[in-house]
Image 1: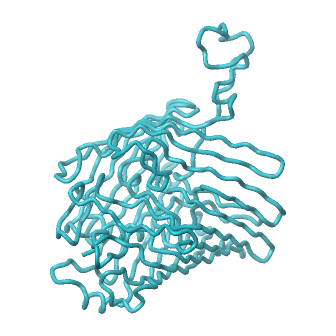
Image 2 (image 1 turned 60 degrees about the vertical axis):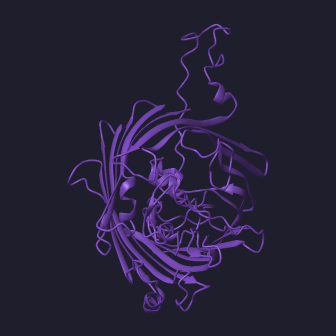
Image 3 (image 1 turned 90 degrees about the horizontal axis):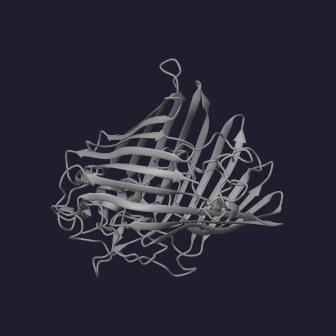
Length: 474
């Protein structure tokens, strides 16, 4: 039936890191959540004049003022090298889960009335199918992250046009109203958390007033997730009735007509008595394959609208949030088409707080997420015989524990998803050590467990892996 059954589920869970505290009036654009923003290290201070100087012809890459070649060109970035391996054999995938080097180059230049920003990765990926760049999937030797121009024509308006990374919502690695593209391959393979957010080719307009702030993002053509295809991570294939991977690589039908397949994102925000209130709207398509073409058997991206709201505020020394979303599957509103995902209702509540009474620099975050399939009876009535059925309600509890040690140079983190309804779980432990202003070393793991091979996290059990990374920032 639907090869993409596994990857469509990912649109329900896994979301952005915790957003900042309520935004003030006139702030043109929300900051990316913690872990998804692009961290930059300050340049090392130059030595006093006369100390450490070298002759001009000795091959040193700094100028007379001690500034590096990158600094003289206005370039920042990092070199990230990481390798990972599965902890058990997967007959459908290679033993290595990741083996690559990424050179990030970033440049921003301000002119009289606008700012231009460029950011991209030069990639040496030993597991890549091809080195030819594909800007949609991020494959190849070039992954373009940002290429945009931003301007503020009036104090009450901000405009950004081009490739950009966008994020909305209040969840921590749980997305409800954020319908911007995600990179699930990066997230489950062991890349840095910032790569969970894939770039969008869009026009963003922010309008600010005392009444409320309105953000409109228009994408002229459909921007899908960087979804699981089976070439790097195995998944449960309902058509085969088993786990599959490189033996059953997906080739869905991706809509790409300019205008006809455009997407529209809306967010209306207002701060009221310490409450950050947001309303959301989205008109487009399911971001990962959520249907199947009956003629070819290939995955499809049916039309979808999402309407929701969120609230966030300070409570009991921490930050509490709640979020709601209604997923209107416009091509299957009756829920009786077995080839298209049913409509859904999704809800989330969360709380995060520092725990100085337990230990210094210790933070705990908890969330409860529920997903309800509408017209579940019609779904069961049309489900082909022998295919595992999804529950009407899916529950997930998440916990994030973070501890800083050794003058905050060592960061220990554990993020866990546990589903009481699916009887499965996903754990993300990691340890990161800042060696100096330039160098950081990280080790981590992706651990999947489950009773059944077809559940949300259980299907990825053979993708459990460990990884190590070294990053040099400049």
